[in-house]
Length: 233
Image 1 (cartoon, helix red, strand yellow):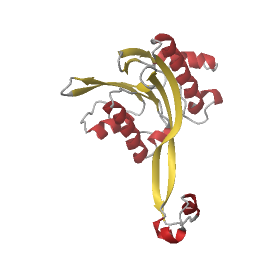
Image 2 (cartoon, helix red, strand yellow; image 1 turned 90 degrees about the horizontal axis):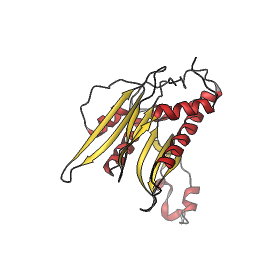
Image 3 (tube, one colour; image 1 turned 180 degrees about the vertical axis):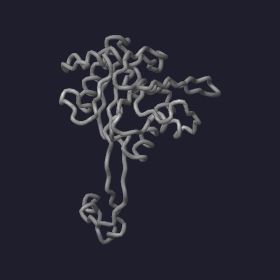
């Protein structure tokens, strides 16, 4: 099933990315629940997790009431207010049921808001880097063509790597894995450029304690398209 255009307006309702990716994430999760040992389970985590804000001088004394503190002791000058926006995040996470449900693998689905500003891109990269620091190699699925920015680039910049092969690619899938040698570590990357009309790749999905398993994006994407009655034209 070739990659469809989920972003160029007008987009048919069944093809809109924010809804379509929820079905896709659920199908990937179901696939790995059938494939992985019973010790592991996949969850779908959708939340607003990236912060962007600017300070405001506007006083809101009701905040001090929530702290149950006498306003005369606090003073309005100590109240800081921020105008904030949050980018939507969607992840398929594999958790270890025998180890306090800790995350051991994660697939990050990119939304336009994750790429909309330099702050959002950097914070998304920071979260991916934090997963790597914990020994979790995320897979970043980025078919967003409506915003010409690459989160693989942002992650490379965040980590301080001078990697230029995929600079400027707007749509991509990037799989990552941390290889630990004890005294040192290495990060392996498998970036793949995406284009509308192309088939999706199969990439390694790093899961702690299991090393890597195959993530066949094409198979689950095609299943999602069939479930939503979408056909390539």
